[in-house]
Image (cartoon, rainbow, N blue to C red):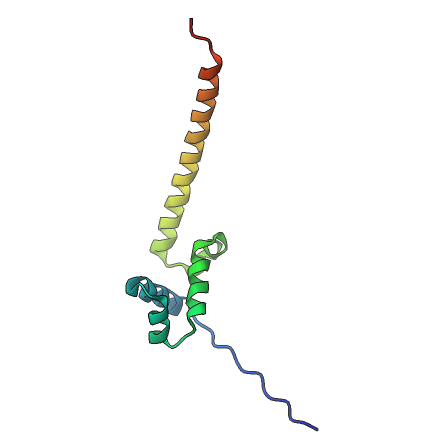
Length: 102
């Protein structure tokens, strides 16, 4: 019988390491350099950067630091208010465009 090779274990990165990697990548302006410094694949950092920008990552609020989570809540509230204001302005434009001026 052949000996089956043991599967390689994947390295797991905690939220603190990810945050540090993203900070390093943003400060150095080179994801490649940050990946080399941390001895990880640059594709992994790109993936983490993409996750930060998607709503799925925001739903996992436990992984976000408190300051980032608070800022995210504020920005979402601002976006909701601005969307409401935009709807009101759209309705006002429709109303005023339908009225005839003598």
